[in-house]
Every structure is written in C-alpha cells, then in structure tokens.
Image 1 (cartoon, helix red, strand yellow):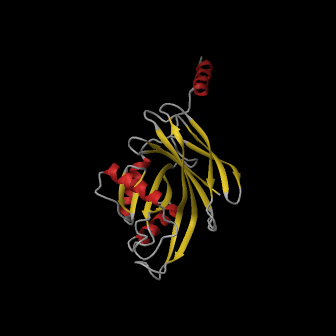
Image 2: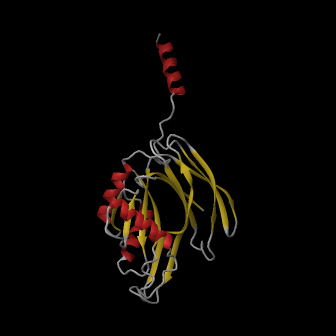
Image 3: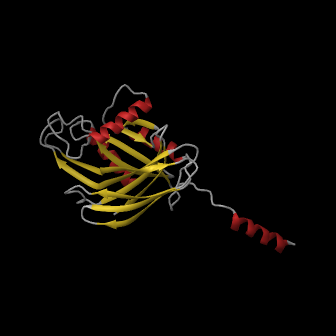
Length: 252
C-alpha cells in the first residue's frame, strides 16, 4: 500500500508542469534598471557610479539587477556633445514621463522595471525599488547568440506565455564599459566612466497575450564600439502600462 502511494506521487510530479518564475539559475529575480543620463549634466556622474556599483555588487538580496545606461541628447547644446547620446533615448524617457504623470524629463533618472522612477543617484530609494520589483513574478526570457561579425550580430529571443496583455519585446546592445574625457560643458576636465551604455535598441516584435514568442534579431555594432566588451539585454514590456514583465542578458 505504501509503495503504491509512493509511485502515485512520483507520477503526479512527473506530469505536473513547471511554474515559470522568471528567476535566474541562482534563484535571483531579474530587475531592469534604466538610467537616463548625460555627460553634459554635472549631477549625472554620481548616478553613473551608482549604476556601476549596482551592476557589479548586486547588493539587493533576491534580485539580479540588469542595468542599461541610456544617454539623452537634450544636454548636447550645453557645450559638450555626449558621444553616446541619442534622440531615441530622449523619446523613450519622454514616454516614461507621460506614464508617470511627470511635467517633464530630467537627469539623472533611474527607472526600475518600468514601474518606479527616482533620482538616479539615490542609493537608498534605488535599493528599495529593486527589492520591491524582485517580489513580483516575472516572465522567463531567453536569448541565444546565433552569429557574430565585426559590425553585426544576430540573436534569437524567446519569451514564454506573456499573460493578460500584449507586450513589446526589445533587445538592447550595450557596451559593458565606456569612458570619455570631457572637454567642455558642466563636466569639463572630468574623466567619466559608464557601464552598460546602450548603442542600439531594437524592437523584436509584439508578444501577444497568452502566447509564446520567438524571433531572430540583427544588431549592428557602431564603429569603435565594443572596446570594453559588449552585452545584449532582452526584455519584455507591457504595451499599455510599460511594466517590464521579464528580462535577461547575455555577456559577449
């Protein structure tokens, strides 16, 4: 009788589907951090440094902070043109401002999982927001490198069932480390360091609610990029709320 009951339990475990948690192999939950920054902004270097420390030290228990540094271009007329700036990141930040009901954009701004925003140099608030985001269930995201050349690489992004609403799947190509010797503007004379500087952000497609997603994506490497190494970050963002449902990264 006991043996039959044991076999029955094993059979139930064998056929029970795994519950996706979105956790990494070390049981940490991925949390996406987007820092909107600029080399033309004197308040930004402390935020750049904090992002680097969050990336390196991973100080929040249970969380895997996946970081992106997105350099906006509205500081470029202040005497120094940020070599990593893009109008695309300015537009993305403006959309976040609308989502959060803000009057406008500012730097440095840290956005956590698309659901919380704060001054990018505020260590305490950043850790609190990361910890809160890590308690939410996440959709597993996979990314596999298919091909890589000097100026282009290809990856395949896969996403498990998204849930109740359509979501956008995005892929970012970022330099692990980058630096500049600033010659003019508010940071004139300073040597600035950055981590996970986004050089390309591509929309892979739309993951429909309740379905899985798989798509091959090509990413172009800008001339001179990659000296400090590259990483690819893939994430899923709900179209209506801009909440990040899941994220992962691949180091190259």
